[in-house]
Image (cartoon, rainbow, N blue to C red; front, side, top):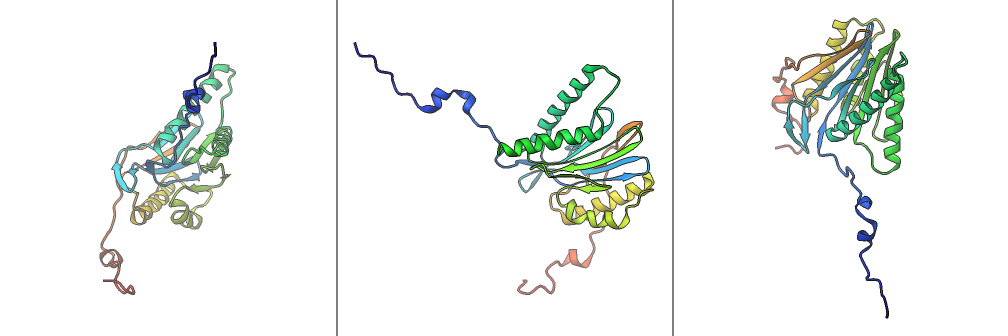
Length: 245
């Protein structure tokens, strides 16, 4: 008797584990996050818009979250990938707390962990489509860093993601100083967010400002900025342009 194996498609032999699920293109995204050091800790600002492509679909997306006892995380980019990162961090903090040794992960350790996660996923050609800002205070030492979707990272006295990296950083370079008060820091962040609102089509006039100090994290209630749209360049943006209607 002749037994012949029936040919099956390769995908059936490999099983469902071989299916590749990737974020090929971000769907719902958040725009810039801006953060700076001030004399007592870290201040961070982000609006609450979630864009579905070029449509401002969601207006109440929170993109800043406390991480453990000493850290604050803000994210630009794909919202679902940000939620995945928060799951990783929940597991990390839970594992750290299980040791119950009186120590806890500081912002530098959390930032280093995020750089490894982002770079690892980039090397798998399956990146998490986010730019992250991580700030915190531990034992009186302030820390502020950022990491991109491909693992590029650095720490600085002020950082920004998205359009903020182009439009807010010049303001921060000009006006930031080491002994900023809380009130002055908020004014600078509001100035940055106002410029982004004018110039970034994905920005919405509904934002939160968060601070982290030795006492912990405080995230403000959402609020709107006062704006002025009567500039002549806004009223007639193509005036004097060559070939304009």
